[in-house]
Image (tube, rainbow, N blue to C red; front, side, top):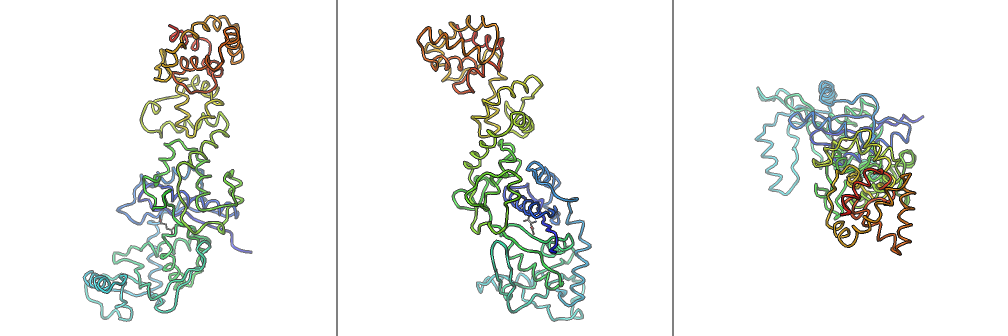
Length: 473
Ligand code: GLU
């Protein structure tokens, strides 16, 4: 029986969880869940200068918000430094690695020479065959891998296919620095092995690293996990993803009012396809996801598509879920009026009642909140220019005429207010739309809103009559 699948997401906490990292995490998660396996989380915090707790927290929060859970406790790479050292020493003992005493000046001279000859800089192996007896005193050596010098290192990548690297181009790279700390190359191999990882899925910026890591696996006699290097995400214009294109932290997407399910759905289609299909529930995604259909060319990040997908998710969400999502998003919204909004039971109820009409017109939670602003507005309402023009162009007269009819209603509902307006329209021979617009202007201060009878219903008798009175004059 093949081993159970174990994947891992291994972010470096030197920055926040950006959108590319989120997609890598999603692919690892889907693959593991689809195969009945596990996804582990490893925080690669060996760069002590650049790793921060704030970044670790942002990564954990971002994953949780996206609904990507991991199995077991997160592993912190830095805490495993002793184990990394032990493996480097074992490679030394087995003759697969050696001490190198080259000074910084010597290394600089090597780089300089390579530059002058137009070659990629590489270590020349000068300590490969020398014995420790030649070591200069007082110099703490690094440990380098005695990498194969001929032939090629081959990677059977599940996305890239067969990729081969000429060994002459890969030098004897460092495993352990002179201060005893492991390099990224060594730490990743040892951790993946010790964590029982069977499948690595990560960005193709790690492809050359993968070749070097294969050499470490070979030197250790360990079985390497399967490899899948996924193309990076580019902007809609094809250029490398920058902030302008959406290379932002996941928290920024939260603040822009995207639903996690929509972002997940958008991300899964970024570089992976399943025929022409666009929409997947989480369960459908888990069942359909495979590495064979991850494309080899960079995916393009497209805000317009993300927005439209988000709009679809908003329209198909339950009203109560949207109220909860909105409330949970408030603290993440950019500072402004909305951020100060705090929902109480009454405003929550109003929002819920208005949601069927509101969610039809919003592509993001910010738009949803903006559309809901009329619910919480204080009298007398601020009226925007377009709405004011409608009121001025005869709108007030209709409102004044309708007021006593509304006031006389024994029951206040969308149906009863609609009946009153229809009666008035019929009696006066005016089109319904010509009455609906001034009502909308007076009740919401704007020219767009949910259906006007729903607005009357949600606002209730007292508030509706008050707002109409304010504008009837
Ligand atoms: N820590 C690396 C990064 O954030 C990933 C290493 C790996 O996946 O092997 O790019």
